[in-house]
Image 1 (cartoon, rainbow, N blue to C red):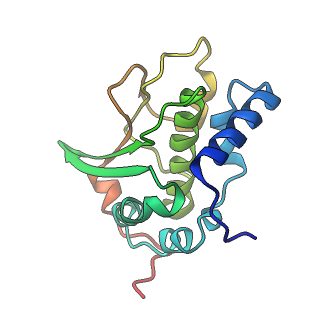
Image 2 (image 1 turned 45 degrees about the vertical axis):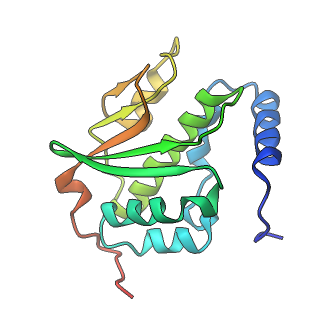
Length: 170
């Protein structure tokens, strides 16, 4: 049943098992290749109809618990950027992969509504810098920081507030 909610603990076990079976150190980054906003159900369609990237993340923040009962997404303006912070509120054996997944999927969702030219101004990871960062550069196409205090992406305010061509107020 595509509408069934999976308890967080079962999903975490499934996630751990998928990471182990894949033997892919970039598993989290590759997640965006398979993800579509429609996978989020009504929230995904609301995302696609958002008038701005800020509105899309406002909706994500408001309804994040539909995706994961512990996930919080917070927004704050800092200088010339909208800072979107993700917090799973749960330790994980594969926290760095989960973090990569959150940020790669967020980037994919932004590109789905703002166009493939969308780039954050900075992406922050709490995990340590991996030995190889080439794929991070090719995916995010912006500066990034490892060992940060939070998992977040900074989006220029002018990009976050730009009217999107596919928006639908209704």
